[in-house]
Image 1 (cartoon, rainbow, N blue to C red):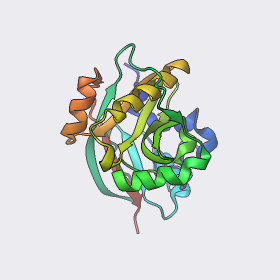
Image 2 (spheres, rainbow, N blue to C red; image 1 turned 60 degrees about the vertical axis):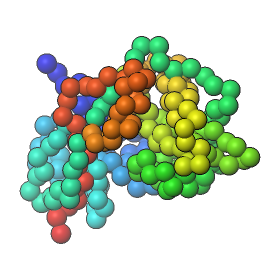
Image 3 (cartoon, rainbow, N blue to C red; image 1 turned 135 degrees about the vertical axis):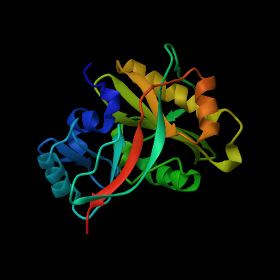
Length: 226
């Protein structure tokens, strides 16, 4: 059976839709540091692929996303944790009148919200990975979600976060539906990741009908050995 594109989503994103956001050498790639900390290798990477990744990584720590890989000589793994990859049910997603499409003018507000809510990595140009949506009250961004990794057939729902003062109002669900609606409009299917130990998020996503893929996905923090 050939590998599924969701087994190595960053590689497929950086080789396709997100190529303009990539720093590449050979088959190895990474996002520009201001976009995301993710690096990518082809399936079953060779020593040459690791050397190419080292060339684009420099002194930076990178995050590898997907099926676990054995780190090559000359590299060190700084940590890893298990993630659950989930796919949306058919028909999930719809527009909401209180949800607005965010723009580059909202970038600093998005970074500030992520710093408070801590949904995962988010930098000054992460919003370039796709469409981001938010809910604003009195001109202040109080919740958001958007598109991150985009493969040929799938787009990841990411950065789902709400300020503590606005939790319990269903904003996360509305935003996920808005993102999913846009993903379907683009001819792709939504998926997402969450930490394997994040029981609150897992309960929400399962309640919404998301199903787990049966693969051993991990996040691996790696860098060139010093």
